[in-house]
Amino acid sequence: MYMNRVSQLVLFLTLAACGNSQKTLEAPKSYEEKTKLGFGSLAGPEGLTLSTATISGRTNDTGGNVINRYLWQASLDTLKFAPLMSSDGPGGILVTDWYQPANAKDRLKIQVRIKDRQLRADALEVTVYKQIKQNNGWIDSGIDLKASRDLENVILLKAREIRVSNAI
Image 1 (cartoon, one colour):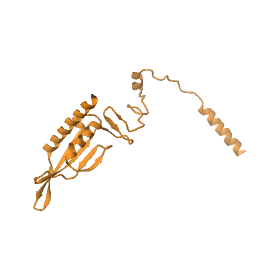
Image 2 (image 1 turned 30 degrees about the vertical axis):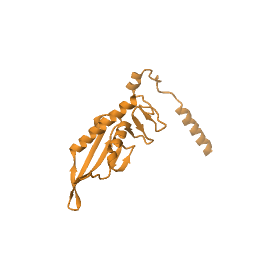
Image 3 (image 1 turned 60 degrees about the vertical axis):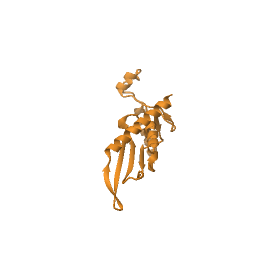
């Protein structure tokens, strides 16, 4: 008897859910209608990516992070002179170990951060840390803003050169 009542209740709820009390809407046909009503793509504006392929200057990793490959390559090429301590391709971060030019009384540590997938000046942030040798130890001298700016310009110029050479 109890099972009979439960099955009747389930049947009633199922039939009640099938009722059509809402008015039907047609799907938007034009792009303008879709954007106006908030329709979008489940895969995002750039489509679905199933591999780590590069598309028009962007490097995709499987985690979804995207950086500009020209800025990445130019940063690697530019920092060849210093020993690389850490590199995070998907995150767009390169950090060198301390580098001391020959016969210099100071040493440098460089951090490059690529913040965007576009090849533009504000997508790149370079920080040059400086230490000065005093007695038998190293004293922090802060961030060398001029060296940071100069290195940023060198990397940006190199990235543009790589992009132009790949376009041919």
